[in-house]
Length: 177
Image (cartoon, rainbow, N blue to C red; front, side, top):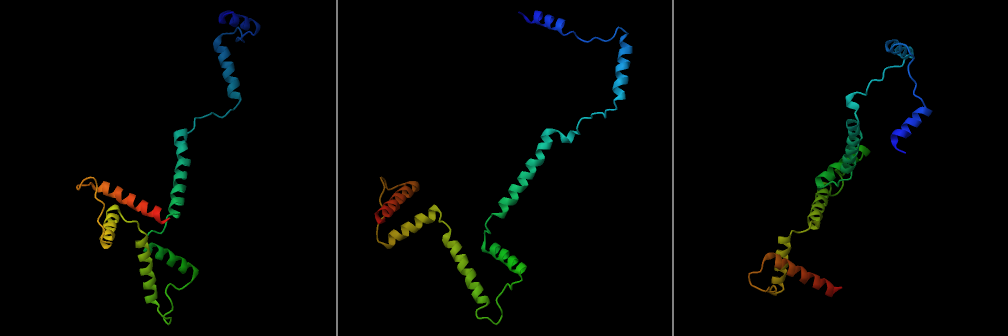
């Protein structure tokens, strides 16, 4: 059965409602009168700024602000000066004195020594660059009166030297374990 015959049979079983035999203008006027009697508020489209792509920017912007605030709150103090400022603000909020009492032994000298020690620790924990590491290793070899291992040629590329020194260090670590 093709679509045309199926549609014809369906329309015979379910006839379409037709307007009364009166002229079309009368029928249209009657329908409009019934619609206006319903007092349905007109449905105006949403303002343009509430369109979906623009509306989606609001949660996206809020999420970005939250990520920035959370990310900045978990950053380390960075420098000792930043940590000192943060500690001073906390002590001030708690009502504690920032500096030791003037009559206490040491006072400012003790604080200066602590700061120097903290700076020295920060500098000591900093990883050396490749050039510094090579210079330190060569200096240690000179102190031990050892010659650096000669490569396949006397004009070895610094990258090859780095690889050889890393292999030498790995070998020493393996032997000491």
